[in-house]
Amino acid sequence: MSCPVTPGVPGAPGVSLVLDPLVRDLPGETRRLRAAGPLTRIQLPGGVTAWTVTTHAEARRLLTDPRLVKDINQWVDWRSGRVTREWPLIGMVDPGRSMFTVDGAEHRRLRAKTAQAITARRVEAQRPAIEELTAGLLDELAAAGSRAGGGPVDLKALFALPLPMAVISRLMGVDPAEHPRLHRLFKAFFSGLTPQDERLAVIEELEAFFARMVAEKKELVARGEPADDLTCALIAAEDGGEPLTDEEVTGNLQAMVGAGHETTISLIVNAVRALCTHPEQRELVRRGEIGWDVVVEETLRWNTPTPHLLMRFATEDVEIAGTVIRRGEGLVISYHAIGWDEAQHGPDADRFDITRPTPIRHMTFGHGPHICPGAALSRLEGGIALPALFARFPRLRLAVPESELRNLPIVTQNDLAELPVLLA
Ligand code: STR
Image (tube, rainbow, N blue to C red; front, top):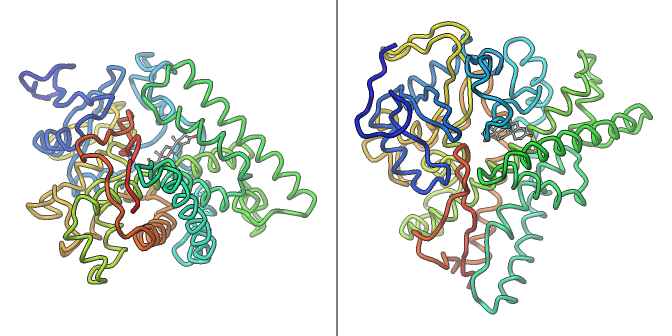
């Protein structure tokens, strides 16, 4: 294999970037990845190395290549025992059987019903409910602001975090009383600082939680009293299609809640941050010259919720951009670098700019069979939450210098630990 060793870079030979587990400089890492070419090797936390793709065109090709699959059993590092359940990122690669981890005909079967239920047209029906949830949280935010005597409040904890959980839970039929527990579990799941024995316990608890929920919903369906939620719809398969197994419904439910929750938090947090640090662009939006939909798309492109999506495995040698991904090797999709691809977005691709001609041409939701089924829902959420927030608090601004904002310590997500703001 011909992978050049980059001088001066620590890590395994041929690795052009060792990802910082604490994500202290995502823009810097992305610049280095972009400089390393369309296909390069990165080192993930835990010393595991993989290929990564950093350009729009090559990623597009790889994401529709059937020789790259989600099945962890194809991975030489897994088969050889070099990667085990002790690897800190195991939960991102092997979260159980669901539409997230299978391919081909099985994948179509697992995914169809969920995807059809959350098309743009169908999710539009959720608008009034999302508006109501947003208004309720904004009232609570205002109250927290008063209690803080006009001092800083954490916009993430009070607004960006609870809204996506409320929305996805309502869709899937999760009991609101369980939100605190799910917040605690996903917080531990999505932190690189969680000790591994604790993370494995969290993964077990999540599985048990969703399996119990599916068992309860199944009883409702059996009694002919299904709740009006997607979990019951997945169980019932009343359209005559082949029903999913309990394990498959559980896996899909878990994937939907996990994905709908963490990614949408970062969309909201990163959009608020971008507007607060680009006042002239905020003004264009305030004056109605540029729409909130554009703010959402440009945030998704420029500061994607998913900087590195783990992982696909080659079932055969795959040649791309003059490089061969050998059978059994792992491939990460580096969406932050892909969003900054000058060939796709122009020479200023690393700048947040809602006036650019083509913000929508990003690939943040992926491409091909696994393209994000929740894209329309997240766009709807962002398109409701952001204008409502800025209308309610027109003076909203960061309470600390931007340089003091810290990312969550997890390489696969791009989210802030806290977003301290002043409301008035
Ligand atoms: C979280 C933990 C879990 O119980 C199930 C899943 C499967 C879907 C994953 C999710 C995970 C983590 C966040 C992902 C999501 C699919 C899309 C989302 C990777 C592992 C993104 O961040 C884009």
